Image 1 (cartoon, rainbow, N blue to C red):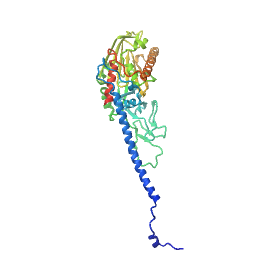
Image 2: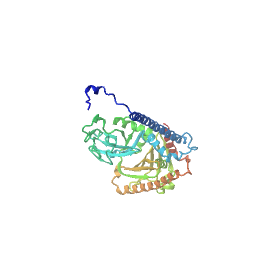
Image 3: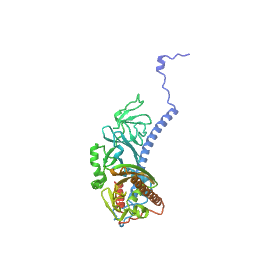
Amino acid sequence: MTMITATTMAVLPKPMITAHRLLLFHTQKHTSIIAKQQKQHGSLLVASSVRQSDNYCQNLVDEFDPNIPIEKALTPPSSWYTDPSFFDFELHRVFYKGWQAVGYTEQIKNPHDFFTGRLGDVEFLVCRDDDGKIHAFHNVCRHHASLVASGNGQKSCFVCPYHGWTYGLDGALLKATRITGIQNFDVNEFGLKPLNVATWGPFVLLNLDKEILPQQEADNTVGSEWLGSCSEYLAVNGVDSSLSYLCRRVYDIECNWKVFCDNYLDGGYHVPYAHKGLASGLKLNSYSTKTYEKVSIQSCDGGSTESEDDIDRLGSKALYAFIYPNFMINRYGPWMDTNLVLPLGPRKCQVIFDYFIEAHLKEDKDFIERSLVDSERVQMEDIVLCEGVQRGLETPAYCSGRYAPTVEHAMHHFHQLLHYILKE
C-alpha cells in the first residue's frame, strides 16, 4: 500500500469542477438574480397598481363638478357611495388628514382614565396621565402588533394581553418580558407610537398626519383648524363644557357613511315626510342654513316656550351643526346630542350618539327617558331611509341626482368640500 506523505499531498491535483457542479452554481446564481428581479418587479407592479387605482378614483372624483351652481348641479355619482376602491381612496384623503372628533372629555376626566377606538384602519388609545396630561397613541403593541387595550376605564399602565409588554400612560415601554439575549434593541425606541390629540369644548380630537404638537399648542389651534370662523358662534350658542354627559347609543347601518351625512344635510327636507313626530315640534318654515369653511349650520325654531312646568326637549330653537367630514352637533332646549359617523366599508357605517344635558336637569329621570325615547324613534326612522337609499344607489337605474336649491345648500357644500380634499 502506498503511503501518502506531506510532500505528495502538497502536489495532488485540485478536484475537477464537474459539469454537474458547474450547472448547479449557475442555476443558483440565476435563481438569485431571478428572485431579485421578481422582487423589484413586484414592487413596480404594486406601485403601478396604486397609481392605476388613484387614477381610476380621480376620474370618479371628476364626475362631480363643484363649480356648477346648485340650481344646475348634479349630485356626485353613485360610485362615490358603492365602489370599494373609492372607499379606500377616501379613507386616506378624508379621514387620515386633519382633526377628527373621536370622543369627549368626560371619558378622560380623571388621571388614569382611558378610552379606545378605531378610525378606518387606525386603532387608537387616548388617556390622561398622573399629571393630568392627555396622550394619544396607536393602540398597537410594538412587539407583535396585539392591541394593547380595549374599551374604556382606568389603568395605571397598559399591559399587552399577548406577551405582557408594559407601557406607561406616557407611552414609554416600561417592561419587555423574556428578551434576554436580544441585540440592537433600544427600549427608548419601542414605546407606543404617539398621535396628535387636542380638546375643544367637551370634545376630544385626533390628527393622524400632523407633527406631534405640545398639548397647549394643539388646544390653542384646533378650534380654528377644525371649526374655522364659526368656533365662537358654536361656543356662544351652548356648545361648551358646561353640559353634563348622559349616555351613548351606537347604531350599525347598512349604508355608506356619506348617505347618513347627506340625510342630515338636506335642510329638513325629509322631516315632514319621515319624522312626523319631530316635525310637530318644529316650525319647518323657519328652517335656515349657513355655511362656513368646513362647517354648515342649520337652524329652526321650535314650538316650545320652555316653561318651567313643561320642559320640552326641542326648546324654542334647534341648531344642527355639521363639521366636516363626519361629526354632527345637535343643540336644542336643554339638550345636546352628537353624531359621529364612522366608515366601516363601502356600504356600512357606524353612528355613535352621545347625549348631554344642562346640569340642572341631570336628575330629571322622567324627562331624560322621554327624550331618549323620542331620539331613538327618529334614529330608527333615519336608518330605514339611509339603508333604502344605499340599496337604490347600488341599482343600475341610478347614477346621479339633483339638488333642491332652496333647502339642500349644506349638502352641496359637503360635496364641494369632499371634491376639494379628494383632488389634493
